[in-house]
Length: 63
Image (cartoon, rainbow, N blue to C red; front, side, top):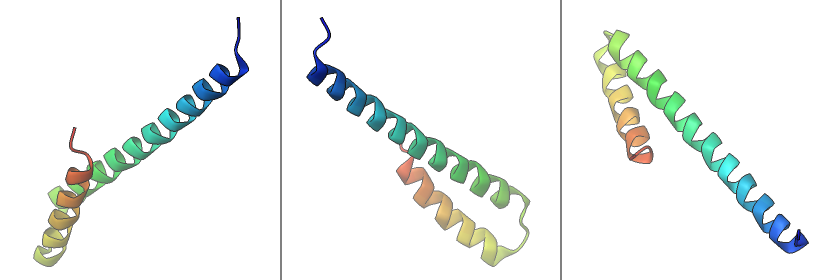
């Protein structure tokens, strides 16, 4: 049958998975944006800053 406790646990897991997917998608969008900015900028200081940010984002996206 349907155990209410199992359904609650399943719901919590689905909610957690959804939140993790949202966080992953956010990091991937940040990485894509940083990569695009890095490619188009000619300002050396900005390029160095973007490279640093990109290294942080990539360390968060180590998959």
